[in-house]
Image (cartoon, rainbow over all chains, first blue to last red; front, side, top):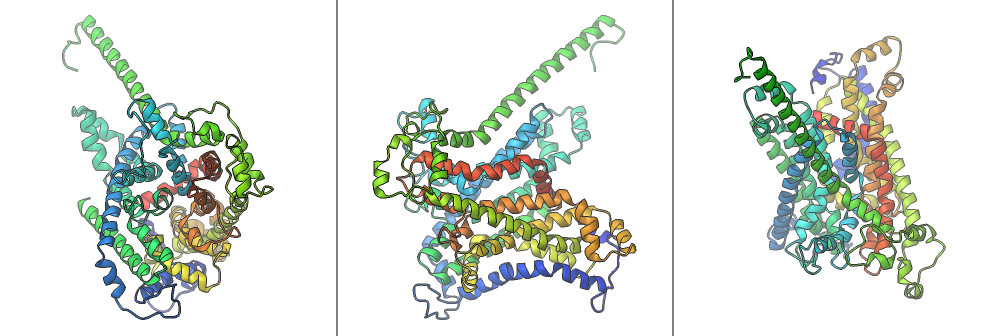
Length: 305
Length: 324
């Protein structure tokens, strides 16, 4: 943010608030109030709750349990299985988003008639509500009348209709597919920003040096996209780890425990078992893990660039 | 170009012709690749949606055909009619049993909640848009144009609130909303959606305000404008594109939100469209064509907005990318 330093040095460095600082305070006050009440306070309150055995099934007895909720969560093998599923879902999804978005961004970076139409169409999955997306894929995956079965059957890939979401081996991948479909557009837009910053001279120079299309892609395009990719990977990983809507509508954690991810576990523990203390502890672990992961990825990429 | 010597005119002409043929072949090849890639892209992006729309236009008899009718043989608007007339009908076990499956009669008992939910979604989304502007614009202006201590820290601090997953905030959110007595009211959604959307709004606005020259600020202040007047009379009119982007993002985020609405709403009084649509998907006796029509109803407003304001959305999203 270069603009910050270019601002006129109006305010005094030390001493009490200047006239302008008081102005700024007034202008920022509404935002500060909202964010404090509905973001900062809940984050702190969440930690406080996680230290208590708050269960809505016995609202009048709320014992202080210290870190016991955290111990319960972290020593529960089912929690770690859920962590494994969340990790598998996230890795699958983010990898697929990165690859598909790169291909689409390369296409949309070319000049050709119809490109404008494609860029408009790109926004359709982005704009669709997750609930409608979930409903759409649930219908596509339907084992009796779904489009996936119909298509594969008509193309002779399968001899009879198959069970899709109900098959524990396929569930996570199918949910990831629905997630990827909706997340690709944003990633494409972010990658296109990176592609647009590559000067045409670089390609011309590489051509003169005798680099073929693949070499130009590997040695000019990909390195230039590094920071855009970093953004896509950090953002999409955060989205995948916290994702809830598709799990709720497509499978409710099933079949069996096949799609029982951490986000789903927090929901079940909190709103079905009404164990708020345990839910808050799990939430805190998830939030800290997300922060740590985002920080680690950004640090790692910042060092490489 | 090595090879034919330029002294030999026929050889030179031949070389030029060959180069031209090669470049024409290259152009055709490029065109073909682009065409195939475009078709794959269109298929991947649109096919699922087209199939949803197609199945919303089929009646209950047609929708269960094997293999599916990709294009409805007898397109019908009955499913949409059912949504818009659901209020007058009372659905009971008997009427559901008696309904002819072929006419798409299996409409759910909660079908009459669809239209009120649509209204709730609209009210919440519009309120969140207005509040985003009221809260976001002044603070973004202050952060972009007024120098004060802790300025850049506050920008990053605001964005950092969005790193925490919503699912991790549901417990404190729920208790907070319950203690305010706002459970099952639209206010619970408006307040929390505002907190969820406003960081990104401020971020877009700060980026945009920063790109406007500081001289405007000075000139207006020399002319005797207060900070407030400088903001409303000078910067807000110039920042219109970013305001449109902010309004769109706030609207779409509120229209599409599911998790928080699932926590806070309990009755049709406050339930939004995603909640009602989601409730259909867990009822296996409901006609697929009816559910699909409800799905189409939920995607039409956001998709239309996105297509109409494509330019603003892309510039808003890329503002984040360039800075971030």
